[in-house]
Amino acid sequence: MYIDLNIPTPVIATPTPAQSKKSKGKAPQQRDQNVVSFSPAQLTAIEARLDVLEHLGYTVFALNQTVLKKIDAKTHVNTLNPLIERLRWRANITLLKRLTIVLDEESEKGFGLTNGNLSIISPYDLIALQPTTVTTFSQACLSHTVPSNLTAHIISLPLTLPRLPFNLKHTMVRTAIKNGAVFEIPYVGALGGDIDPALGNVGGGESGASVKRNWWAAAREVVRVTKGKGIIVTSGVTNVADLRAPRDVGNLLTMLDLPQNLAHDASTKTPQSLVKRAQTRKTYRAVLSEPKIVIPKAIVNAGNSADVGSQDSVPPLQTSAAEAPKTEPSTPAVEEAADFAPPAPPEEQSDFQGGGRKRPREEDSGSRGADSSPPKATNLKKKKKKYQM
Image (cartoon, rainbow, N blue to C red; front, side):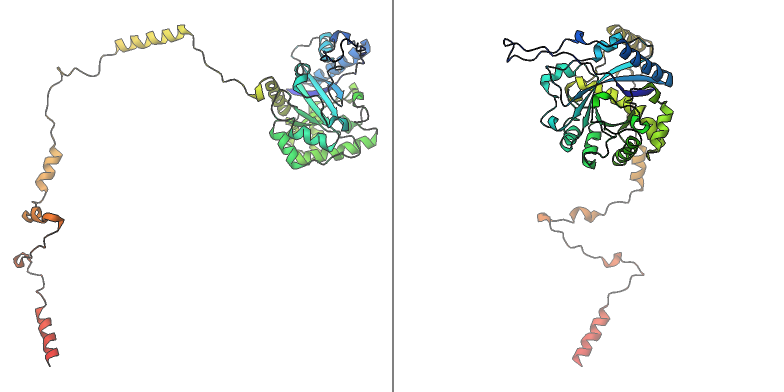
């Protein structure tokens, strides 16, 4: 199963109604989605891209809506819901909704991922952040990847710029990957194709060979810092001619010093696990409830009746105490050991006197054997003679 999580959609300009004096100071209301309208040419272009991706072997697509600077509840409109309703239904194809927020200097104070905008963000399946400054990059990696209802799942980097506007520090990248976020590498820059027009000047004002050179340098840096872990590859193209097959994309990633197995996982296993993890965004801190096994009562009753029937059919293994013959236990081993045991000496019982002191034992001269040496009394006499002399 091959997955492409970045299919850009056209930007729809919706008129902003004038705020009256009566509604001044009231909470902003979400815009009506019925005002969104796509031209037949736009719908035909999107249908053509989906048909080519399906022909190439992709089965999961993510339509991408791009928002600049921050999410504003007054002006934000979800354009993906009415778009999916107008697209042609395809068998064995899954369409997801993705929201990408491009962060700049004005987004450092906040870019709309708050509980107040939860009703606006919840309809989207994936949330992506594209930082363009040092502050926004640190916020995206450290703060907005923590599991919550507003978790950012994808960190997309502007790879077509002449130079990345920040350094990819190992601590920030490791923290983002540990929290479950992934780093996106769109291969449109390697082909020098058309970039999403919604990005404006963020995607880079250059074109042609310069865009390719910038992409290769930045993509190698991403692979080096991440060590090939937590990377997904997407298309991000607006032209049908720039789409590539999954195997061609894998060969392209191997030229970035990425192992072949990780290059294959960048479009299969890694985005698949990302989609599953994104579903936990609707739970509290990405915690799922503990499952409980419910056994039907019919099965329990059938099992109990089977156990009772088996107990009745088996004869009892033990007899009653009245029917059992009374036999005295015999201890032949103990009796044989007692026969070979030596008799205890009569003096052992009187070894100890009162008070716990041991009485000295008198040596019997007759108890000594014939081979035992006599006491050395002669040596003492010789020593006495020497001293007398």
